[in-house]
Length: 309
Image 1 (cartoon, rainbow, N blue to C red):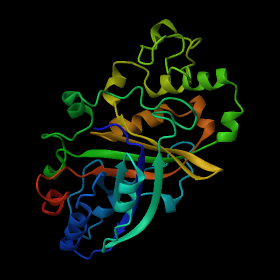
Image 2 (image 1 turned 90 degrees about the vertical axis):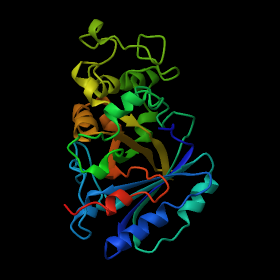
Image 3 (image 1 turned 90 degrees about the horizontal axis):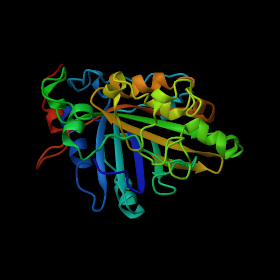
Image 4 (image 1 turned 180 degrees about the vertical axis):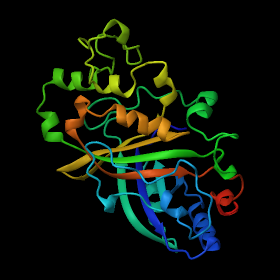
């Protein structure tokens, strides 16, 4: 629930442990605290291939390829996804340096905030997020609840989507400011919807049905059209930027939701054909399920202790 910290590292692994006891050892080692860091442990669909007899979250599947995706298998999926975040680099380095038997690396990406909450395109991130301090709102949209069609061990967990997106920086930087703002539907300096004064102001779509002020294919209009139906599709976004080289930089898009199909997947399909699409190249990531916390014990104990399914 905390805002994205200034530095983060995502590491996907495949599990080589041979049985459930070995998997428990891996999760126990991953759960050991790292001073100054926040560590999140999530599981991918491939962990539920029958090796450990685990009961799979009902909505956990491999991430499909969406329109404009060019997915590289070397940058996708994984049995486990570990995210380490901190306000300084040292705790992240300490966590990453740990070598845990039973795991082999699959992919790894370091992220940062270039300027507070702005992405590399220069626009504010997460303006449309639901209020993470509102527990009832988080229960409704982020956390799996008792009574959901899920295994009992999933209660208190959340579906996580990670998207590694390369940004076409030369093309973007060549665009004049008014084009960039029309692509997003917001002013670059304040983050306000075009024609409004404040970042969190209502965009006023009913008074602009033809898209003269905020284009019909603008990012904010496609992502959240502010209809009664779209209220059910809220997600909690926590993104970072990455830079692998001067010519390879982009966005680590991360979001959490109670139902990945109702949340991210629905929004992503709605974004197809948006004006921003030509500047983005999604190439990696995956669908995962964040394990519920475990008071006084290792994260994932509910999972490895659950009945086979």
